[in-house]
Length: 219
Ligand code: SF4
Image (cartoon, rainbow, N blue to C red; front, side):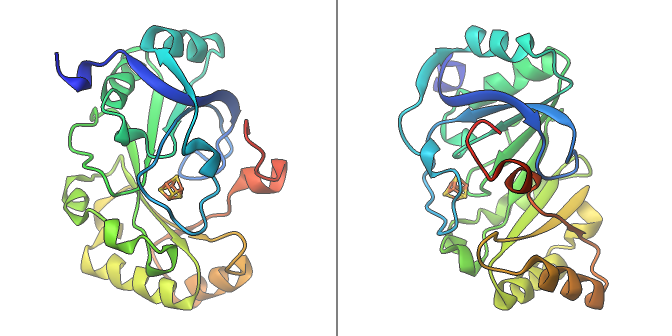
């Protein structure tokens, strides 16, 4: 039996809220937050998911998700793909008829993710302190159903992200390129002005949940 077939996952929380970012922002969504992450981005707002959690059989996870009768399910972390059993969870969520997205750091191979899943792949900037973890081979695997996200800490990050946008032709390849300010570091208005001035083919986004619920766990 391979680890991918593992039927138990370590889960930090399962909750129903509004999607706070990405292409489906504002839509009611069930979140499955998997425990653990091999990265340490300096702005991380999910450090409570690094450790602990509860070991849950896949069937229980699916039952809890189903109880909310969702249309959208987002598998997040931590870094969900750090648990190999995540692949099976994603497949079974798709089989159950949900529209499924996966939020991943960009440091793990996304090739085995079910093609029905919208992969939201971070490209970590120099300001994150984890730029060395980007697995650039992932980019060629992405298509119109997928999204690439940059969290920007300063102007140097913005210039770096613009360069990557050009270098990989991201706007032509993936469904959405998302530019988001690191909440405590980069003024949102400033980033918005830069994007408009440069007429970039990206979607500016703020993390809705931070404004509505002050980033409390469970929202
Ligand atoms: S990849 Fe995500 S969960 Fe992991 S340290 Fe970075 S921001 Fe936090």
